[in-house]
Image (cartoon, rainbow, N blue to C red; front, side, top):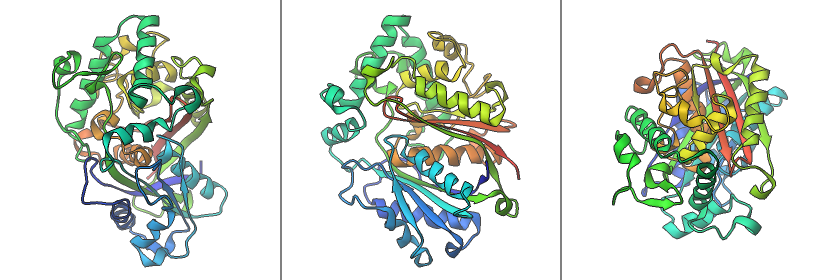
Length: 388
């Protein structure tokens, strides 16, 4: 790969009623350029990841990036969208511009403001990332979709209450040290395991602690070609970046296999000439705890039906065989749709440059990222390595 991450910015995720999509973009653009120590006039292209789907009345948002700095005026700017993988779609578009030598420096931004939307509308907006003719009337919206997936998994492989609770507790514990996380509280295994007034069932086997958070937030990163990156203070290279798109209807797939995820990981590992054992950590898409569990199996960390064993043995804990979601994941960090994939890349770059603070994985050398849009429909895997 010829693209490197050379700078970044990240707002805290959470409820930001006094912010707007525009103001969130402005914050991270300004901070990312300052962090990279480049002028806005040096940017060749801008890519914005913004899912929207009704969360913001302003649906034409690419040019909002220009308003962060007058020197960005007249730069090419494009908004991209690929459901919950929108942020990683923006990253990939930036990489491809550099690979095509159409740009030397690309500014990538991801943003979403969700919490100002009434609850029922949030569910309707998110459900638009499903196949509406077959899945559009699912009770409880997208939570219901993954509740059905969890129920099917339990039926095929046995009840996995402990594994789901362990994943939730692990990610919340990790998130206590992430200054950008929406929830920085160690909820503990017992709270996540047991139904209670504060942790009720939401859909199928999924309780509130099994579900990622509705969030506002933004993240940005600056990409540069390798020659440019090596002249900068930091350079995190893409050893691989793969995108696999699968069928939208779940009826056309065995949803418990997440075959698009499996294929994306296989391609990325092959492209990077590494194995899972070479990775220092993984940031994966835990929109729901059942998703992280199945992703263990799809990435090859566990055989089919044995993801729970990997979880319960602590192999994915921060001090385990392969730390998964040392940031706290979407579960603790929050999930502002368009910002999520960019956030994953920012936090992974921080790990590899030793700038991750309390969430730092010791001696991190290679990082893997999996970002999913829809129910395993849009699948993006990146493998990152620090080269400077």
